[in-house]
Amino acid sequence: MTDQVKPEPTNDVTEDTTEVAEQPSTSDSELELLHVELLNKQAELETMKVQVDDYKDKYMRSQADLQTYRRRVQGDIERARDAGLESALLPVMSVYDDLGRALAMSTDPEKLIPGIASVREGLERNLDMLGIKKVGEKGETFNPELHEALTMLPVPEGAEPGTIAEVYAVGFMKSEKLVRPAKVVVYQES
Figure 1 (cartoon, rainbow, N blue to C red):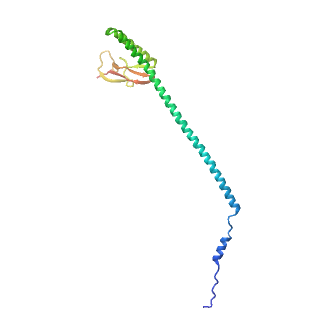
Figure 2: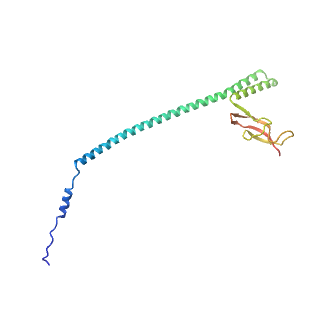
Figure 3: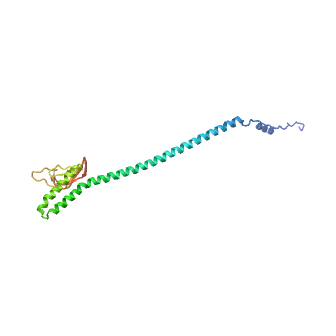
């Protein structure tokens, strides 16, 4: 059995390397296409960078405009608040002046009462010009949305339950908004 013929070794390794070496390399045209595509992508990237810078600039301008707007609105609010305060103080200042004149006229209490009544009427006129109306008068029907009941009294003869017996502090309304509720005593059946 020694006479057997041994197969000749093949040169498989060499063939494999030659196959790899024989594979076509990237052609110049493919390289050129890749290069062109790379240049296109770089151009797109530059365009996008310009757009991002543009959007960033617009964003920063918008933020600056918003800050300017907020400052302007805040200034408008402060000016409106000051104007409102001034318009509310004017009637009070005239009452102050009227009370000073009433006190300067006489120290006799009998002579002061008509002056003080006149001052109160002037104040009511000024409040009326501002659109402020009185709420809560003796004999009115009690309304918990407009009046604050301080206490209850038994109903005397001739009075109706649920009506205002006394007013400790008049309430005020501006348009349909309650500024201050009237503080009252109410008749109630026991």
